[in-house]
Length: 355
Image (cartoon, rainbow, N blue to C red; front, side, top):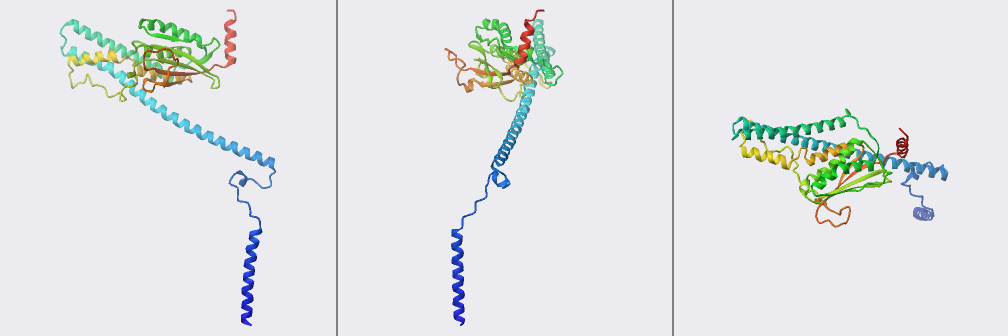
């Protein structure tokens, strides 16, 4: 009896196990949980509402991504601005220190009775006067720039006829280019092209960008042309020249200058003359490097931008494929915002009205 009950129990357990396995195979599998937006949506939504909610979710996600990219861009721009300010301060300090050293050294020669004649003494005084005037001119430019940066002297941003501005720039620079036997090519844009900028400072910026390589070049060309980017609502002014490669190879440590004029060391006449001549020939006041930093600051205050597209160290291709016998070129780009169409029409009407 006991063995019979045990056998029936084992048979029942076997049949139950086999039945459960068979039912599990034949039943449909439940769907896996969705990992997309469907997993967080209520199941009672109709398909139209579901699609609208899905699109709203995607738009919100894209907005968060755009804000993240903007925050990263703002952080990068702030970092670059701090680097620029540090470099500008170092460059300005070096530029001011050089003429001061010349003045002190020349005065030390006179006070130490190292002049061979009264004529030589007067010559040293004249050289010291020249260095002092250069330093004063640099201080005037730095003060004007600081007034613009801190808002003491606000810019007069207004619509400008770009062709007229470039014609004035050509008038002020073409004679100097002819005297130096340089080819200056300024392509005037369409007469309907207007930009937003300060007329005085834009003219000075463009003249500086042309005069800068002109003072360094012995031969070659300087080209300027304007290109419109309608989709970006801006005008790109391209300036290409053949300035020496040494312009882009200046030392980084501007404050590590030769210490001429120290109170504990009396310089020799030869050392002072070498320093004064080197300052006069190799370092215009302000130097081309500091001029470039000033131009960049002025353009940023006008809502414009300065970019270095190519240098002799990273040469790619000139603006034009004409015969250029000289190798090496520099290409800069000034980006200016286009003027609003309504403002241009009002200015054109005002200019046609009888006085």
